Image (cartoon, rainbow, N blue to C red; front, side, top):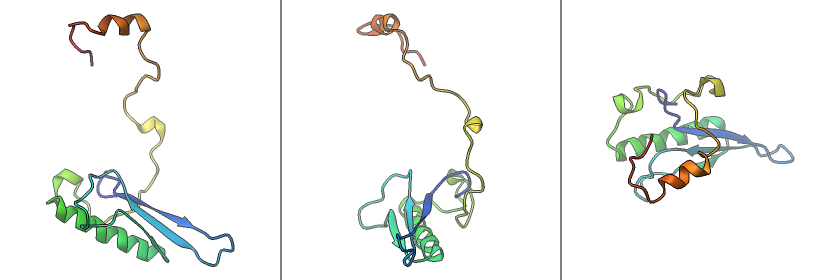
Amino acid sequence: MSGQLEVGRIYKRDTPDKSDTQWLWAINGLPRATFGIMRVAGIAPSLEQAQAELQDNWVKWLAWANLDESSADIGGAAPLQPASVPIAAADIVGTIPLQPESASAASEEVGGTGPLRS
C-alpha cells in the first residue's frame, strides 16, 4: 500500500513437498511503464526479497511517472506497507445495478437524440 493505493500483492506458494517455498509478487492496477523500465511481477525465494523487489520496481515506476512517494497524487506514504485489513463489501460506497434497464427503456434510447443519463 502507498497511502490508499494498492500498489501490488505478494503471495506465498508452497511446492507439494514444502521444500521450496516461493514468493510471487506483482504490481497491479497501474499504467504500464515503457518496456524495459521495470518488472511488473517476479518470484523470490523469501518474503523479504519479494518485498524488496516489489519496492524496487515501484520506485522505478514512480520515477518513470515523474512522481514520488510524497506526491499528493498517490497518498503520500513511504515505504510500501502491507494492507492492514481487507476491504469488506459493506465498506464500498455506491452500488452498480446488476441488471440492465428494461428492454423498452433501452430500445427508446437506441438511435434517439435524447441526452445520456448518468
